[in-house]
Image 1 (cartoon, rainbow, N blue to C red):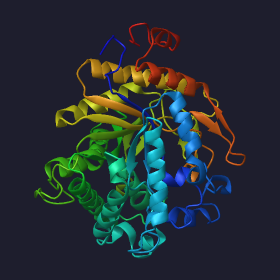
Image 2: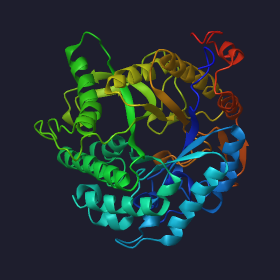
Image 3: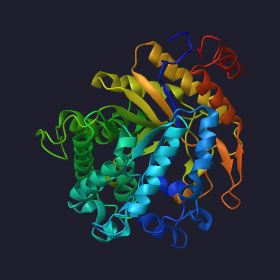
Image 4: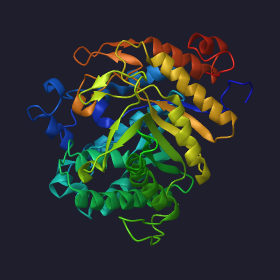
Amino acid sequence: MTGTRAFPAGFRWGTASSSHQTEGNNQNNQWWRFEQQPGAIAFGQRSGIACNWWANVEADFDQMAQLGLNAHRLSLEWSRIEPRPGEFDEVALDRYRAMLTALHERGIQPWLALHHFTNPLWLEEMGGWENPAIVEQFTTYTEKVVQHVGDLCGHWLTINEPLVYLGQGWLRGVWPPHHPNLLLALRVYRHLLYAHAGAYHAIHNAQPDAQVSVAKAMRHFDPARPRHLGDQWAARLRRYLFEDLWFSATLDGRLLPPLGIGQVDPQLANTLDFIGINYYARYQVTFTPNPARLFGCEGYTLGRELSDSSSRGPYSQFDPDGLGIICRRLQPYGKPIYITEHGLPDQDDDQRPRWLVAQLTELHRLIRDGADIRGYFHWTLVDNFEWNDGWTMHFGLIDMDPITQIRTPRHSATLYSRIAHANALPDNLLARYGMGSSGEK
């Protein structure tokens, strides 16, 4: 590091995206089908042509290059690649190959996620992630992808936010397949673990030097009443279910209750080459005797600044310290850390610049103190289709009108560009956003 605010040489400055949210006309997956149902999406909106990336992603890749970004994390659409079971679409695979080539031509390192919440319709009709056959099906799909584009990608994320997908589909039941059932949720949890492991080994069999992980959603849970035993227990339960179970299995191979009785499965062990963190906010947990809600209600800290709201209320709160807590907790695992997602919905861009500088100041402090953090991927480059919330959530560094497709860079795009080009947090930025010339808040 060349200065107190410089980031390490080779630090990855990127953005993140997903296929269904950006490509457009992914008509062969379960989310497209869900969107057609009345009342499914806010204001009856639909993904439509999304950001039109399938036809012309290269224009936005040009924007990335102009911003000085050196990495981009995107996902592949399984329903395009394998539109029918066992039938792979070479045209779709060639299009993804062209995308990856275009990134390389612009000096941008591609990172690929194999699954980002969407499934082919044929898979859903076979039971999807509830069917144990998913493990072999996902592994076969991975093998085909690596065979076709593996030479263009060295960093892989098998599954994006596996436990968010689990929670939304099988605990809360607000996403397809809408099966709120604890027993089914546990079955899906195991299938997610083994599908990840199958994909991990498939990638490494073809690319021994590949770096493979998941994009793991991480949230810090505090007891709303620090001395209340019920609140403490409900917060700890969340950390156990959404963090300890997953990392125990993928690092040590140990299946803890309720997934197992502590037995070690070598197939699962050591299947994370790095830790990818998707981080947005921390939560306060208040005990409730309702097992369907995991014995707790989650909320934000009173008095903290909140971002724009989703259909479920405020999306996130200003909390750069929470990421520091998460990273410090993960350091003992001895794996490199990448922030594979971070951002906030902010249509008028009056919060994003300050939140971004504060978050990166915290990352710099962690690196200065010895944390092995190697990259930051902002969610996202351009406004995109945000699942149940449709087009109402504006996460983009660049504003985009989904009707006209007109892009307008926000001030935060200029700010992020300046940081990426410099690989550092300039003093005047820190002072402007209240961090002080030394980067201290």
